[in-house]
Length: 265
Ligand code: ARG
Image (tube, helix red, strand yellow):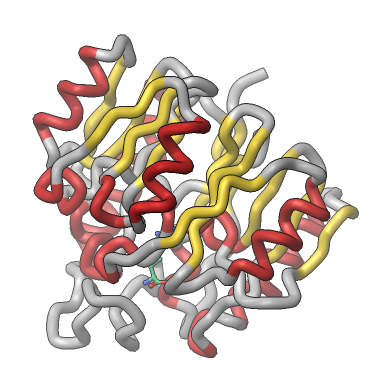
């Protein structure tokens, strides 16, 4: 079975508000560049990797809907829908809920406290690595644990540049995680070291190139091509790496992983 993902075209992608430190209304993305970068990523998934890409129809006035991973955490046929921290993003949940219902998903539950789906959760083997601090709450992590019946490795994010867990941490396979240590507090770093057999550390510069915001099928890693030295660390660990230009989306605080909701975890 080819891997299945969901993407949302960047038709209405813009900086209409500022809810993280990367976003500035006076630094708007180029429509053309955003479309080209999104299309290239989309084509890598289909043509280079043979994956199946489904699309959700973008909605005017929801510029961040393009970051499809944020809508939920999905494992098997169970979906925990997001409860976005900022009012500007809250209407996205209903759009994605509609998509899931139309596509045959029946086990949907919306988080009761703030929770931002794949932005803050990464499936790691039979566990979930989850971030809290800027967007999702510790209560949401408890809810995750109860809903999916999986252990949650709960980490506290402390650097506002990496407000979502997936901007500073990538699960590469069920043994390997790449992360930027400075994004999380000391206790969280210790927790990770105990739970993850192989850890790859990124420098602050590497993290800022957004190559930790990566999608992996356990063999291929797809991510921003901006952090060349980090891509080489991935290669040295034995992965195939596909770097792609994606920084137009960093103007909103996003990258490859944010644009990609994996449907088959
Ligand atoms: N502008 C969006 C926000 O601040 C970016 C979300 C990026 N998504 C992610 N999974 N990191 O909410």
